[in-house]
Length: 272
Image 1 (cartoon, one colour):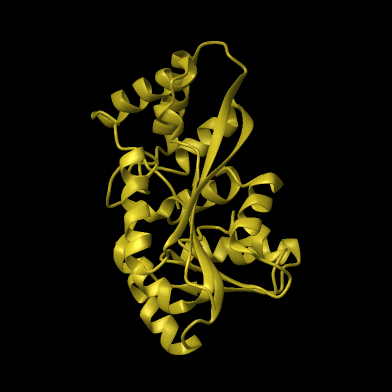
Image 2 (cartoon, one colour; image 1 turned 135 degrees about the horizontal axis):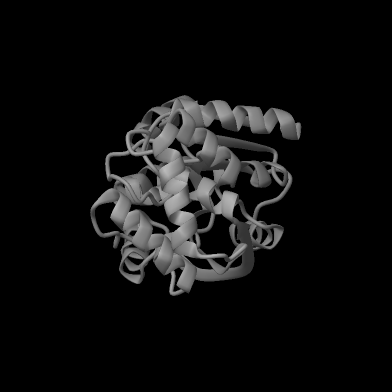
């Protein structure tokens, strides 16, 4: 799960989950390579992906390890993740319905130190980071690691002409300013680092991988819809009005390019 321009209480269910599965950006191989190297993953590793959404990170990790577990609070997201795993032939993934606060129950089931590594994407801004990292310290083996992965900033908060036009249209549509960076800002990253160290992951490194993404107008619209709540997602005539207004705001541009910076905050616990 990731940033939303709608509500801090929004959920990712129904048509929003469908848009998420289809349009939410994934992770290029170079990002997965860097992440696997930083976490020391190999074909025998066991990985836990918290806030896994529809599997954008879980599945490429699963292709490199022995087993992966994806945890998410939304049943619709997990249904679509299961479908994506089936389509990819990934038979080594288990999907678990639960929130970050439920990881203690998972530890009771798997036992302590059952995983070699854990990952959390931009869903972290919905969670209690200190409590989550403390729970992961019990779940991840000594010498294992935890990675906080930020796959770029919200598309409506970039210093680009098309992004400013997108933000203006969204703010007009929603009737409020959009300023929250949903865990991608420097202050949040420092807070996550401090919380990792406090939980016992005392070897923390900041890594970054860049890639260029170019979206068509339908892809940009789908990506925006993937970040809306079901209550504010435009449907029917409202959807037509929203898209016509956005097309007018963006002008005659055919594609929308962004240099995406993926931040990897990787903490490792003490040696085995």
